[in-house]
Length: 392
Image (cartoon, rainbow, N blue to C red; front, side):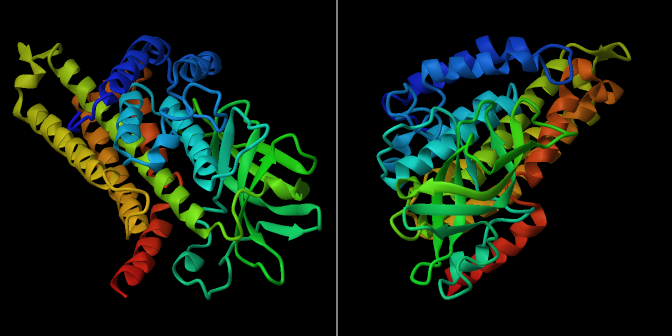
């Protein structure tokens, strides 16, 4: 996989490869456009059972060493990136489920808060609209705090009432709680707050995003919060969650890039297999220079994407400038991988756009990932602002 594995990490890679081959491929390797989506909950239950899916609940097998498990606090991020990429090479939607679940679990772990009744399934609700949340404040603490965040948490004495809305929240089916980024409306405290809000709370309205192009194995939600009451212990931070929000953004962008990289590798592998079995003009099409160039360029882009990911994910969460590094990785890797999938699809000719070969699904998934977590336009502006902080 292009990574140097530490003692014990190989078994997690082997476990992930086995899960992808034996559990994911039979459901998504057929000739239907998005596989058997009815089997996704059962598949994800298996991921929890074997410890691939992380959870905020310490009693779950994957709490420590699942994808984005608590062990990321003391190590780098390469192992989780690698595991996501392996699963995404078979199905990007399943990888996105495991990424979103692990991301929310890691935020709870990073907060240091001991939950008395932790949810099994959680989702992080950061995004409002199409851009990253309040990026101005992340670089300038004196700016409107936090900048452009419309979701508000107002103190009530015994707790808070939360009002606002969050967009494009990726989540497993059956999500029990949301980790909600808010603007704390208090005379002494107008910074970031992160709150654990049960999905069944009064005033929480959840809407599924319909008519989606790709990643259909993972839920995408819009959530409205209308005077939702939470107790004081629902707050995960100790007074300002800005550092936690930065770390969450880093992990989210890196994970999305890892899913894209896996999809690209899967596309290149499928193109090579097809070219080695398809005849045209009395010879395998892999002998044609045009096909060779398409595959070579696709593979070069996929490998360049992985190399960039390996470099960024080798850093620790406390590394200086990590936020910008992860933003650049998300922007560039998803674009490289989309181009790799597009060229791989061309190897199939017109068949590439048919559902039978699975390439059009990879193309749809790769296209969605370019905008997931932040639109490319917003991300470019974010990188510009981050560059000013690094060079200051």
